[in-house]
Length: 140
Ligand code: SF4
Image (cartoon, rainbow, N blue to C red; front, side):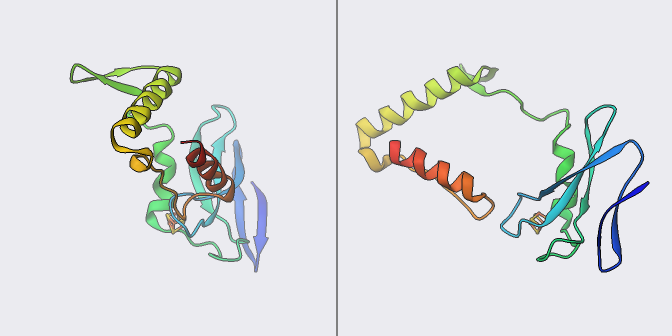
């Protein structure tokens, strides 16, 4: 085992066969610092560690944040867009999904005016995501 980071005597431990990836939890606006634990052999996410060197949360995360990694490899995770056809969700591809979104946005704006379509941003988004959402909204 090797020590990854040390803050005030508290250590994040990198276990044998695992790699710690430094990041933050994106589930809410707190953006708690964390490391994602990745199995080096399989490349799969196997857990998280709170970052003790993160100045805001000092090694603390809430239950939602420490369990969020379980969605990464969940068997019911949706990895491709689903389009509803004849009452059934059918697996599709991003090109078809974006074409459908654009077509429906245009239809809504034609029927109800330009402001009938909007976008939501939130505190869980990074500055970069907020910038892209703004750029996207201007194009609508
Ligand atoms: S760990 Fe909890 S409090 Fe921290 S960013 Fe994630 S959801 Fe928010």
